[in-house]
Image (cartoon, rainbow, N blue to C red; front, side):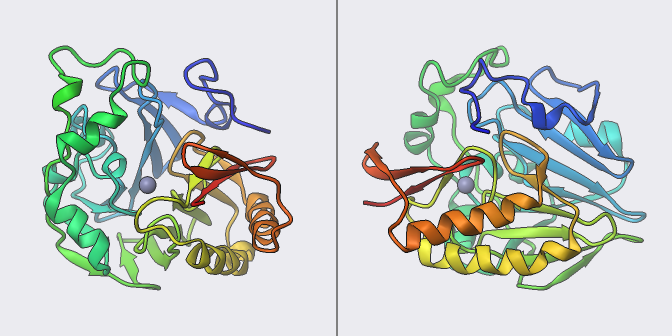
Length: 285
Ligand SMILES: [Zn+2]
């Protein structure tokens, strides 16, 4: 089912299965996925980006840090006093906004991703995501035209199949390039959840950006198919914090149709737009 436009389509059905908790700031919505897994949603910006908090016995992992419009740390601290390490699914502005507020940051070992962290994202670039109509209810005193992402430093370069032990719960890193060269998915082996970042979400998956590669994406989708038996569901990076693992098969079929030039597309916004039942793809011309 196609996603309704923002903000009319809110709240998204894929979030309503989860128990909603009280947030510290009205900028965030917080949902409990299970006793040890939480998601922070930023519903007042049309990116509708998610950051996930995963608790172990000794540490917590924060999968992405959101847009940085409001400090995410009080939301984390309301749920846990464990030290939190950040794992970036990739380093685009909307997933790294609060990175600079954390001491421990894990990023995939890839120059494109590492440079993004080191440089941050300048106001001039970020302005294009702050046009009127793309947000509502900004916090008082926040100047959308001054919005930028501060540089941050990685403390550990992670690689494909690295295991991150949180104490009683470990996370496995799966390198899934395509949206960006160092995009990754995080597998929670205990709860059989795959956190997919921007490799999959309901909505339009961007494969036309600088650093994107459709060839890499094809490989990554095939690889994800091989993980399907060991996971129960997906927690994507935008829009809906639940996706059935069946979408991996739909994604594979969609990608195959594009590859065989059997899929219809429109040309808009200087790229090719492919519409499928559960998602869309945007590819370069
Ligand atoms: Zn992205």
